[in-house]
Amino acid sequence: MPESDCLFCKIIAGEIPSSKVLESDTTYAFRDINPQAGVHVLVVPRTHYEDAEELAKAPKELADVIATGVEIAKQEGIDQSGFRLVFNTGEHAGRTVFHAHLHVLGGEQLGHFGRPGG
Image (cartoon, rainbow, N blue to C red):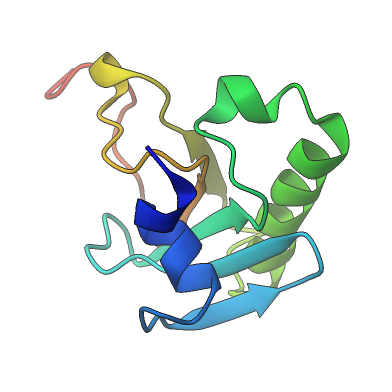
């Protein structure tokens, strides 16, 4: 997918509105429009990487994304109660946007992880 067609690239560029939570030189974080937890924030690298596998080839940017996720957990007050950091990569993971992004989830007791209902 060309970057010009990427939803998250358009959000980063300000072409599509978002509810910004935190930003840095390398990352942009905003609230998910379909939250799956009390706190659900997406952290995206400003540079377009298709998925976590591609982002892993850029260790500095990957570290920045994760550090931003941890900072958001602190900022949102969920660092002590617990939070989840998730990358969805590939069809079976349920990825719907082809720009690497980290989900920061918390603010309530989260269910089990893995298979639905499992």
